[in-house]
Image (tube, rainbow, N blue to C red):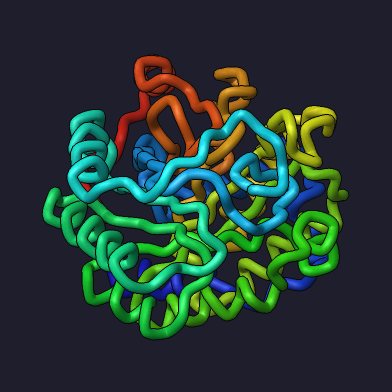
Length: 327
């Protein structure tokens, strides 16, 4: 057992070069998937996927200009603004998620900065309630200060999601209302508070492969690695600046997941937004490439997601199962 632990730790690096990442990403697909699956099996069960549910607890009206997001107040989309849910509404949804097999419940609010006062106290009560249900609790609320991060930790928050989205060089093409350093500072505050980090990115926004290599380098240089790495495929929403982007090749998503698995072997790599556009075969390749978490339910915040029965049928076909317990 000691030898196995030593070999696992020896495989964790934070100094991957761009040349190394490019070599991994561009490898022949059978070789890439084989390597990723080998790494995956050293750290995770190959037949098990964690189920998560993501609920929008405050919808729309965000002042930011993220080009992919239908919740921005700057764009004309069909998203209807909705103020912060009550604690009871949120915990009822969490209970339903648990009954569906989810072990992580994620709460997202369309804020730029987390507000103080009664709204924040309500979020803390939500976190405590989700934990009392025996589930992991994750929040994505925007930028945090140190006091808020410590309060969330005190309430029992398991993880905080704050995606880097893309590379530092391409970031300005997508967002102008928040800097890349702002995102890194929020992640540092989350880490200092003792909350695990959930951070990943989006492909299909018009970036080229070198942009993806840099995003992977940024994520894998964090020490420790993010415990959770969501890999999103752009969901094109009418009214947003990226609505007319051509669809991304699903095999690029497979490559992104495989590279993330190799670079960050112990992390949960989450097959996130965009699954509805993937065939069952493409999703199966993503699992072979090292994805070991999905979001359940028919919505991811405001964008569509496969129905629960569809996911269960897919897992049955693949001989896979939902993880039965929280991490």
